[in-house]
Figure 1 (cartoon, rainbow, N blue to C red):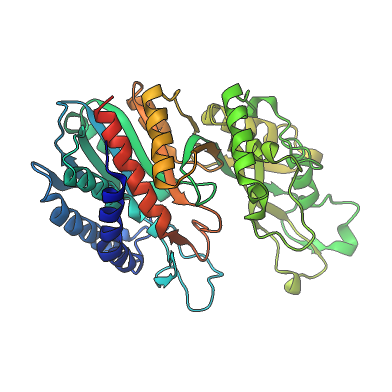
Figure 2 (cartoon, rainbow, N blue to C red):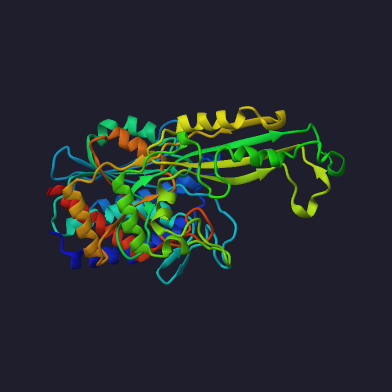
Length: 472
């Protein structure tokens, strides 16, 4: 059994003296993911981040007998850090995952803060990438060191830190195939790239929604014309857009009405949503910066959780073809272009959903307008396999030991594309998906922060799970 007091003291010391200062330096590096920085290789920011991580890891794993680290480089791909730590159970392997690439800057940072400007305020380290999820490698290694401090056995551990996650992990499958012999059979996957409902207990991610993104364009004219002359004769491209979107969702409720984009919600996920809603209370919706007077889509908190994690939802995330209001003249515009984001149920096939959306949007265009829908690469979601009793007991113990409260389980509304790939590659493995992205941590947005106490507690959790896995 892990001595909780000794483990916490050790983990806190490493976080305070080494991890937090290193993450502070890491935030300064603008190593944006390739989708946002095509010249990443020439700029060198990714290389600086890789070298920083590898140097820290190389020094720390020297205390773990037989451990090794390599930086893998496939042609035309972002690099990947592979750390191998021998264990006491032969070929049985735990795979621990994280990434070091980042989202772009985003506007709206508070005064004195910025994506590449680390600011430590109390328990929060502000800046891009610390929580999403630069901390993962540091936490995984520190958990292994905490076990070694107490001579507690663990299985063979392989830590994978990729550099294309924020672009949808296009490079990871190639590395998983190329390194399959070195990784070996995996019985447990620990992913530290997810969120938490609050900072008061361990949160396990049980599912992730899929995503179909795409661009819908409506052309009604070859060029703009005077609205006084044409309105009432030429249908507005924006009105056509509204009609087409109404084919997908109920405008009054936001419910996606296309049956092919929906999926049954498993009963256990409904039960977990109710528990999560009770644990969170009004934080289910109050964590969002609503304007005064605005209210959530429905009043039932459990239904809000299910809306966010299992039901499809359509968002219009971008518009083109229209000038800013201050520059808009009395012109009926020739086209409207909208960026659509359709979140999908975790169990739905995203490629089929994308084809169905295209067929619905392009069929029989209103007034004969020219309508095109081009989807981005669709990403299917993920639903965790049933948690085995030994792991459920270990996670419950870890939550009570590290946080003093029972754990909670909940799906996430966003997507982690590689999870489905890992689920297919290791169909017999158990999964622990958790993270530090809690209320207001604002991953991908302005004022992103890492809640350091939660990072420490997640590290404790990994140590508990690794010990339980070896003794199961």
